[in-house]
Length: 241
Image 1: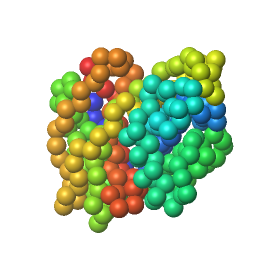
Image 2 (image 1 turned 90 degrees about the vertical axis):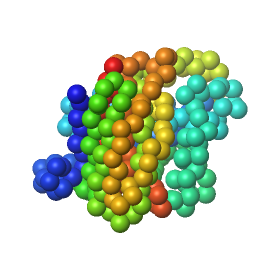
Image 3 (image 1 turned 60 degrees about the vertical axis):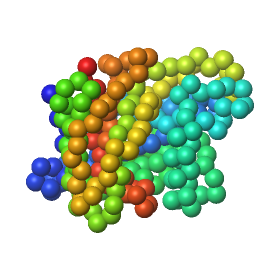
């Protein structure tokens, strides 16, 4: 069985030497000419996370509003466009844009400058989060999710499936003729419950699509404040076949 304990540790206290997990969301599109550098940063973060010791939870969310300009992004979804719009309201932005990175639901910025991305991640890793997330496979496709929150805020518990090692030969639009490489592509993101009385405890089904590569999948759980969209806790595990 695979077990992931994140955020506060079993005693509810983050050790001085430990770093808080950092959730990095990239809103991107294969139809946007400004996005490939940000996609490359996400690929590099995925490669480096195991070596650096940083607990990075990466989500590449492909929006659908650029699909009209000559290329339909096969990973795009109106759901991710809506999620980005929710963030735009939280950050009081005039509109959504790509490539946008959102760190822990707390800060947002244009996501194609590597030095800024690393600086924001390092800052976020020093900030303890008020929710503890424990994940344990009960059997293939059945994941036990336990959350203990020390926040007074009501929070949503979201479950996502991401896939690494994907690439696309783009046949049209602003990136026509390019081969784009992706990491942590969000294949599924859904709400599985909420932290009523500061806790959530449930076993959930994690079905996967036949086109997804099980060896490249991670399952992510986010605890997200329902009012301001800040990430209160998070954890991930590799998919168990």
